[in-house]
Image 1 (cartoon, rainbow, N blue to C red):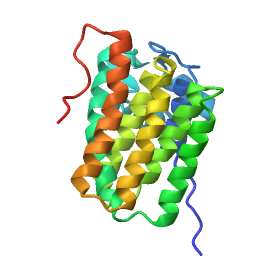
Image 2: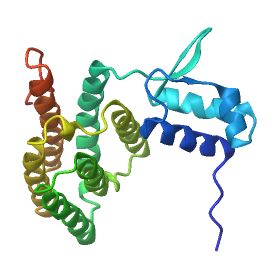
Image 3: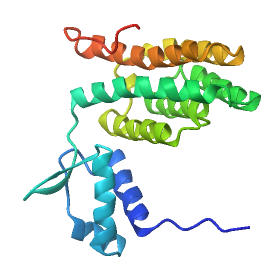
Length: 227
């Protein structure tokens, strides 16, 4: 039995920096000094630079000439763009995964959704969001297209930085969300046409953006057209 390879130094640096960004120890605009980080992690600046490039690709870090790397600023438009992209990507990934899901997968997703329902009485937006991610990952993780999965995960990473939890802004959306989860599960269980599953998953994600935009920017266009 082969042993699991230890993470590379660049992976270690990536995880360390990202943890500090997500926990807000490194706040938006914080300057990431490669030498200081390398010293903290007891490694050269080369793997740190590689980690910074990966975080830049995910939108968590920006790099400016003569300034260096900084934690990306929170940008409302970037949140909107990521949610629009994720609604399409996640909807497609869920549809492509649907036929490969087992009864155990669907049962696990339903159990997660039940936990989400239980949190509604004593609502914790962060805990709800973590369960929400777990629910959706269960449904799309059997997608056979690795590039699609990679794109979904990149947008999830961006959203995790841009908004700690959308449900902090629109807690009422949580009740609608768990109902829509059950509707998606029913479509999967009855082997509905993949186009129906894709549409339900896409509109589910877009509806969360619509709720946020209505709350924060009622004068602006909402998420995606209902096509």
